[in-house]
Structure formats: structure tokens, C-alpha cells
Length: 503
Image (cartoon, rainbow, N blue to C red; front, side, top):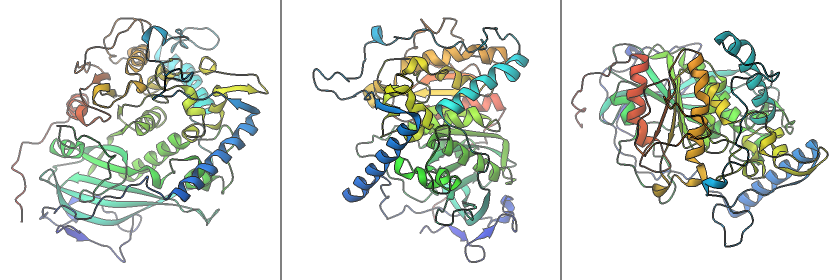
């Protein structure tokens, strides 16, 4: 427990509908510095061997059930990123062999072959085509009867982030489970805004663990801290707020959890059907519900809320931006296959890695078809997917979209296909241009576009790219993202102030 001032309302629960807590003036005027926690962070992936076996078995059973629904009897194995010599499933890292399907679906050509040349044609014809294919075949549809969410603020804290006074709220979104009382879903947010802001502030929502400022976060063993300050510190120092949203409180990151979480609750504990949503879309839904709450908070400039994530959460951030138009900007960190990496590229991770029993739960059930080698419909592969990553990026247009990667030497592995992701970003550019905003400025066709040198800024437009010289994180790009976004949304950083004095 920190020595900050804490407010607990009525048995620790304040209903949003009863007591709006948006005004910063409603909290104590003298924030105190927060002491570092003494408890060790909890590893969210640590389970007993028995529990791990149980989860793996349940995931395989669910995967097998979906294969039966789709008429699939055999799927191809995914690529091996750490192969032994002679492994036939070794990941390819030869650029000369990376484009077995070099021609991708044209982002501005309708299925009937007609070229889209106007913004109206994009919004009324081409965009709906692309969105429909992604929903049906790739990320899944959100069912029409998803239960409602009631938001409660359980705690308000006056503390500091990076030496700057903040007001932090612990917020819980209770999802109505009256149709399936055995399944409980409580969306967990930590909402943190500068205490001394003169008005509503832009906010970056970040997929993570929902931790408050004084709560430790578990990190993978061997993780090397980037030299840049934590992203939260950078945001607060620039006059932004931030939200940490706990993905696991929305949907578990395993196949065993598909009959639980928001997907299971919506299906009343039954298994998915092939077109229904996977975890990426579920996390995106949760982020949108979090934005619902932020729209009630006067301290937040709800018109300038962004979404961010790294790795699998980078995939989720891109999906969120593509399908929730209220998000104003996105920072997509090291997203790889299922994110900014083209499915049609044979480099590092492959479609088959996402159709196997380990990661299929991120996607729609239908996506498994594209890893099938034997099925009632024959076989399918990446070339059969009607859409690809460049079109997912294009769905974000014309809103500011920043694609971020690190370097393999620091841990942002070749597995992620940085070059292919750059090609996809270039290929999305024509939509941004058509809608009257700026793309990367690379005039090359995506077939021959070459990723620029590390630490090269392509940040002059609403579509942006930067590969930093760090690892599997986007903290090293956060200062560049903030400066880029500030310019686009006309946000002015507050005057530099001395850090709050320690008590």
C-alpha cells in the first residue's frame, strides 16, 4: 500500500450511474508521492504443471471441435522458429523466398473489378467489402446479443507517475451475466490522468494488466529495460493520460477459455461457431467498452483517445482501430502475423502458426481453414484468404496510424517480418491518400518497397512508420509517437515543472 491519499466510496464500490467521478476537482488537492511496492509482481502465465496440462487438453479439444465443424481432417504444422538442421518446417528467413504470392488483393479494387477512385466509393463500397471479409474469415464477428457493461469506480488515488502528480482510478466493468451466472466477466481498467491539467487531456489506452501506478508488473525473464523512460511516464510528462486495460479480464489468452470470458458468456458456455470472434476481437470489444467509460469522464478528451499494444496486443490494437471508429489514433507495436505482417509472406511466422491449437483462439474459427491440408473443401492456404494485412491497416484510415518495430539484435525477432510489415504499410497508403491525408511518402510500389534504415522517421503523415533500435517493445518509439500525435491533434505539452517533493 502506498502512502498516497486513497478514497474508497461506500463499501469500496461507487456506481458510475450514482456518483460521477470525472471532475478532477472532486479528489484531494494535495497528491502525495507513492512509495515503491514491496510485493513481487505476479507472473500471469505461471500455473502448475497439472493446470497447464488441463488447459492444453481443453484447448486441443476445442480446436478439434472447430475442425469438425469446418470439415477439416488435417492441418499443416506451423513454422519452427528454432529448428534443428533438416527440419522441413523451419521458418524461412531468406527474402528471395519470402513472396510465393507476390500480388496481394488490391486495396482500392472492388471484387467486381471496378476501381474505387472517390472517398464515397471507399466508405460505401470497398471498405464494407473488406470489413466483411475480415469479420467472416479472419477476426470473427461480435454477436449481436453481447451483454451490457455497468462501470464502477472502486478506488481513487492521488499519487505520482515519473514525479508528476496524477489522479488514478481503479475501474471495473461488470458484464451482465444473468443469462449464464456461472460465467463472470469483470473488465479491469486503471485510468490515470495528470492532476494539474487545465482541461480534458488526450489519453492512450494500452493493452496490459490493468495495473495502478504503484502496482508492480511482471516481466518476462531476461527482459532488458530500454533506456527510454516507461511509456506511462512519457505520456504523463507530456500532459497525456493513460489507461491500462487487463486483457485477461475480458478473455483468457488460451483456447481453453473460449467457453468462458466474454466469448463464453455470450454463448452461455457453449463452443463457438466458425464465424464468431476470437480473442483479438474480444479484447478490441473490451477496449471499446473502456472507451464508453472514458466518454463519461470530464478529465478525458474523449475525441482524442488512442489505442496501443505490443506483440499479440499489437495485433489487438490494430484490430481495435480498424473496427472501432471512435479511437482517434493507434500505436501498433511489433505485431507480426495476424497484425501488420502479410499472411501471404513466407517469412518467419506463418498462417499455419495461427491455425494450430496454440494460437487459433486469437482468430475466428473460420481462419483455421487456411491451414487445412485435407478437408471436405480440399485444402486452403494463405493465398486463399480474401484479405491481408495491408487492408487491415487501410481500415484505420484516415485516422493516425503508427506502425512500430524494433530490431532482431535486441530481441524483436525476424519471426515478426519487419520488412513484410513495411510493405503492407506502403500498400495501405493509397487509401489514406484517397481520403485526403498523408501516407508514408514512399513512392515505390509495395512489391519493391524497402524498409528504411533503423531509427529513420517516416512520421510526416497520418500513416507512420518507425523501426527503433530496441527490442520487442514500443517504449523506445513512445517519444516519437507522442510528438507525432501531438502535432496531428494540436496538443501542447505543459510547461516543464519540478518533480513533486518526496514526503
